[in-house]
Image (spheres, rainbow, N blue to C red):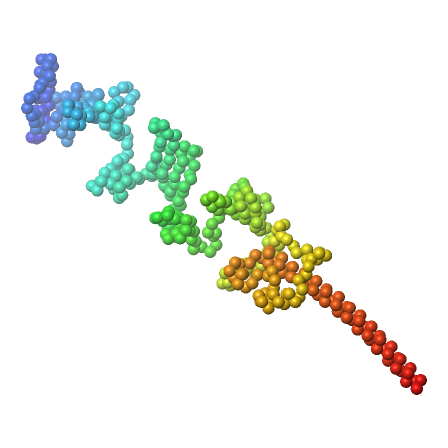
Length: 407
C-alpha cells in the first residue's frame, strides 16, 4: 500500500508540475538532485491513474526516444552522442528496439518485434547463445532446421561481392557458396572417422585417416576393399599429375584414357613411355615379389619399342673385322669378362641398361655365330682332306693287293 501511495503521489505531483509548467509556459529546472520514491512516468500519454505494476520508470507516448547528449568540450574527452529508439515514427513503419550512434547517424544495434525467445542470451561466463538460454561454448547457435552462420562481403569496400554459409544439419556439415548457385564445395557427413582430414604443424602435411602424416599427402585406410586414392573424371580422361618445380621443370601424368581404357604414364604434352592396356593378363609384370625389392617377374611378352636402338646386324657386313679368338682369350685372361660386356663391378656401381645389354649380348651371339661358321669351314675343309686321304689309302691298298698277286 505504501508503494501504491508513492506512485499515486508521484504521478499526481508530476501531473501538477506539468500543469503548472503548461500554465506558466516555462520549463521546470531543478538545481539539485531529484529523488522520486516511487515509479515515474514520462511522456505525453501518462495519466494521473497510471498503473505501474512493477515498472519503476515508464516512457509513454507515440514517438519514444532517449537521447544521451555528451557535452564534453575538451578534445581529450570522448563526446559521442547515443540514442535509444523504439519503433519507426511513420505510418506502416517497423516495430523494434534500437541503439543509434547519434553523432554519425548510424543504427548499430536493433531488435525487431517478434524475435524468438533467447534470440541472444549471454550467460555468466560470457558465452553467447543464439536461440538458447544455455550456451555451452563461446558462441552457441540453436535452430530447428540447419543452424547457419553467413559471411557476406557486400562490395562496399570495392571488392567483389561474395557470400558464404557455414551450416550443419542431420545430413552433413557444409560450406555453401551462396553467390554461385549455392553450391556445396565442402561437406562432412555425421559419424565420419576421426582424423578424416588432419593438417600437421610445420610443413602443413595433410593426413587422411592419420594424425601423423609422413608426406605432403598421407592417406591411410583400414578398409581392405576401398581404394586409398581414386581419381575419377566424368566426361574426360582421368588424370593424376606430378609436377616438378625448378629450371628443368616437367610434369608427369598418369592418365586413364576414356575411350581406350589404357593407362598412360608419361610427360604431359610429351612422350608416353609406359602404356598398359586394360586387357593385360593378371600378374603380367610383378616387381619386388617375395620380399626381393630388385626382382622383376614378367609373365608373357615384354616388348620394348625403341627406334633408336643400334641393332648389331653390322656384324654380318663384309667389311666387319671379327676379333681373332686369340685376342678374345687374351682379353678374358686379363679382364675376366668378354670385350664390350660390362664387368660385375661396373654393373654394381652403375646398374644395367637392359636395352643396351640386350644389344651387346646379341652382338656376341652374332659374333659367336661367325666364329662357329668359320670353324665349320675349317672342319669342312679338313673333312674333305681326310676324305682324300682315305681315298688315297684305299688306292694304295688295292695296289698292294695287285702286287701281291703278281708275285
